Length: 268
Image (cartoon, rainbow, N blue to C red):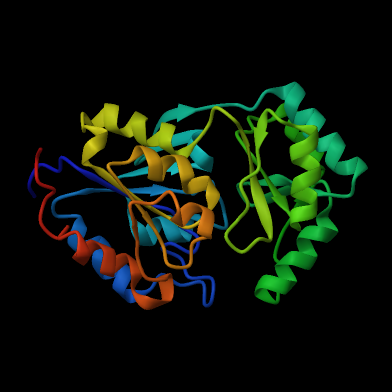
């Protein structure tokens, strides 16, 4: 294998993972395998890709590095390169506000789910997948755990409530508009990409990033080339260097072919 002096980064949900069938399209898997020859593959997700619900996709994609939870955790193989712990006072304030307003706020750690309104999560799971397979725990246990980010499950109305109360936190909506990431303002996937560039000694100009929702905004702006999926929200498309086809229409493969990435990035 040649020395890989460039990075191609991918969001997971609705960028590589199609929610219509919860599978990665064959064309996207083909693109990943062809890219590996000359480029490092990075998975940049709002999820913790090591948890019970996500690691199956991690193991299929086999990335060289992972930016988990919007940049608050970065790993290469089994090595933890970076982990940020959410401020405990902020965490408690978020959880208690959610409890007071019947909002589903929490996180999955391992195979356990810590949410302030489990019923709201159950309802959303049934709507999305037709089933619910979670093991709910007391969310206040999170106060003594190394929490990096949270997730909100619910409608945009709840996001507006949270944004008004917590201006120091970002709440980028999921592409499906059924929830949002809950991230301290200084954290982003872009910061995770910068950490991997430093570890691998790769200029950020020699990177590309794919995404579909607003938690991908910073990484699309910072990467050498930012690519929005055709199914991405319009606000993200407006900031992208290129808009490819939707996930179900071979958007990942199409963008790679458009930029001729099945041979190495040309040096400036």
